[in-house]
Image 1 (cartoon, rainbow, N blue to C red):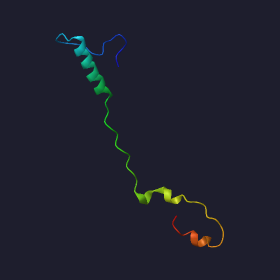
Image 2 (tube, rainbow, N blue to C red):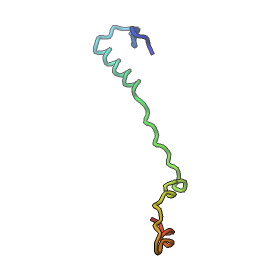
Image 3 (cartoon, rainbow, N blue to C red):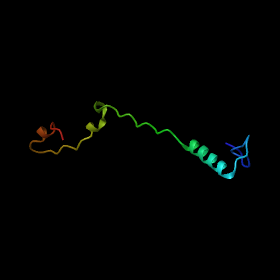
Amino acid sequence: MSTPGTPLLKVVRGNPDDAELAALTAVVAAAAGARAPEPAPKRDSWWADKASLVRAPLAPGEGAWRASALPR
């Protein structure tokens, strides 16, 4: 970072006009703010998914033991 009062850009050669300096500033600002997109997080395998361990509580009653083994 630069300290206050220190210019961010310095023209070493040539004599650019205001429009050229504005274009250069826009390009440098866009390049500084541009980031590569972050890759999507890799999903674990379906075998390692813990969502299958979460299920509704079993209701006691007739045939409940049969319903406990049926997929939902």
